[in-house]
Structure formats: C-alpha cells, structure tokens
Amino acid sequence: NSTAGGAGNGGGIYNSESSVTLNNSTVSGNSATSHGGGIFNEAFLFPATTNLNHSTITGNTADSDSDDSGDGGGIYNNADLSTVSTATVNFTNSIVAGNSDNSTPANNDCATVNGARTSLGYNIIGNNDGCSVTAEAGDNFGTTASPVDAKLLPLANNGGPTQTHAFDSASPAHNQIPAGTNGCGTTYTTDQRGQPRPFEVLCDIGAYEGHSAAATAPEIDVQGNGQSIANGSTTPAVANDTDFGSTGFSGGTVVHTFTISNTGDADLTLSPVALAAGTHFSVTVQSASPVISGTATTFNVTFDPTAAGPFTDTVSIANNDADENPYTFVISGTGVEGYHIFLPAIMHNYSSQPDLVVEAVTITADSLELVVRNAGGSAVVDGFWVDMYINPDIAPTGINQT
Image (cartoon, rainbow, N blue to C red):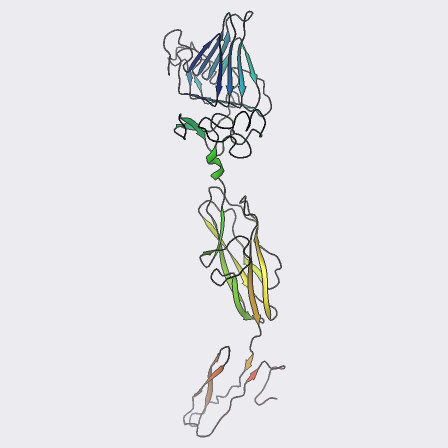
C-alpha cells in the first residue's frame, strides 16, 4: 500500500484516536509520502494505542517522495494534543527493522514526536534512535551508528494463507523467548502461518516461527568398507570392516580405514578418535576437523595383537551432532600364534652335480608345502631331506641342529 499528497500518512495502517492490536502480523512493503510508512499512530482529542504482539514491521518507507517532510519509516507515533490524550505503542515479541526514511535525519524504523512507547520485552528494533524505547528483558535495540540486522529474508509464501518474512539461521530473532514468557507457547501457540509456536524449546521473535532453522545442524555418519556402521553397534562384522579377522600376534598387523561423513547443513566438529582400551588396537591416522557439510574425513585403526586370542575394543568419536554424541561402535580381531620356519641354505653352486634350492613355502590352515628346485647340472638319483624348524624354542644356527 502507499499514500500520496501532503497528508499522506500511514502507508500500511493509519490509526487515529483508536486502538489497534496486531497479533502474528506482518506489515511490509508499504510507503507514505509523509509520516509512518508502515504504521501511523496518532492521538488528538482521544488516545490512540497500537499493540504489536509477535509481529514483523519491515520494508516500509516514509517520505517516499523524498521532499524531506516525512518521518518514521516503520512506525510514527504522535499526540497532537499531548496534554489531552496520549499516543502509545506497545512492543511485545516483535521486530521493527529494515525500514527506511528519506528525510533528514532519517528515523528509519521508528519515530515518536509526542507519545509513549513501551517495551514488554523480547523485541528487535533495528534503529531505536527515533523512538528511544527503554529496553527490557530480551530486547535487542540498535542505533543509527550501529543498527541491528534482523537477517530477514524477502517476503514470500512460506506456507499459510498470507506471506511472511522468514529469516536465516544466524538471525537474532531465532530461539529467543523462553517457554511461558510473554505468552510463548501459552497465549501464542502458532505463528502467522498457523505453524506451532514454539517449534523448538524457545519461541522466535516476530510473526514467523523458524521451523527451517532446526535443519541447520551437522549429521554424522561413519562407514567402513563403504557400509554405514550404526551408532552404538556392538556386533563387529566383516562387511563393514569392524571385524579385523585374524593375524599373528608377533609382527602381524591389519589396518582398516574408516570414513566420517557430514550429511547435515552445518560444520561437524570432531574430537580425536579414541579407543576404550587401546591395548591391541590403536588409531594410527586421526581424522580432520571440522568436516564441512557434504564432505568427509578418514581415520585408520591398526590391529596389532600382543598375544593369542579374541580381542575387542570400542571406537568413540566425540562430536557436535546433537543426537549422536559420542558416536561409538565395537571392533574385534583375533591374535593367532605365528609360524617361524627356519630352512638351511642347500645350494652349493654345483654345476655338474645336483644342487637343491628351497624355492617357496606355502602354509594353509591344515598343510605346509615346500617347493624344492634342482639348480645343479645333474639329476637327483637318491633321496634327500630338508632341515626345517617350526617354532623352535631356540632358533637354529646351523644344519642338522638339534
């Protein structure tokens, strides 16, 4: 809406000698050639009162014809006969920000000439210089030199029968009013669109309750071998690399790489990956932090048993995911006794005689195979033997040692 002419006051609402109450309402995109681009509140012989409850006043313009004759881009409050009646604006849980005044000095958001202005708390006024409202609990008031940016998004269809101004996740309007305070969740149980208020624990300031802000959070997912590992899993599996299998307890190691992904909308902050015991397992490569939205990092766990037997440990990843901190899962592995085989050097470089060489050793769960090659110049016609020592108490130092 807009007004024109020398008496063009109140582009959105013109209240003269009456009472107006706005609950869960938006006054946006209006202009007046004179005073009160959004709201004009005037007392004359009788009082005038405007009550703002969970409302948003933004994007309005005073002195739209720029002739330096207007005031109060968002709200203009005045009592022409201040000795007879009072003009009052009451602010509760409301936003008055992002308005403009083309006059000098510019009182962009609010101007009071003769009138009362009362805060009941939890309001945002971008530039309070023109109104000088006394701040109460939860209020966030700016000045000409340092205005408050409510971080409102453009007027849009955000659901419900009328358009609203949503806000981004960094808005000072988000999650400000405690439940039960100023009607949060009691008097005001829905916003302008009919959506629940509060959506989270605290109510938002203004006409819009920011349901989308809850989605702005990190979301952790941990994978092994390309498969997700459930948070709190206590059943190691080969498929997701939480089962490290078997390896020799003297010198045998198994390394598995795990991936931490952030599928949320905010940075995922990680503490160093920790192990509950850290005896047979160790974190040999740590993950990076933070993990920005849509990216991933990796860490390595090494299984290096110091004895024979089955072993388990618990991986713990402290993080800022609200419902998965810490992220834990159990890993397992088995230490087995390794085989130490000692074979003598048989080759003597006999060019004209048989010369036997042990070429390969293959060990399976139930067999051992030696490959012996004749590197000499003639065939072996008699039998032969190979000295082989498996896990001797004392390692041999010569042939036919007992």
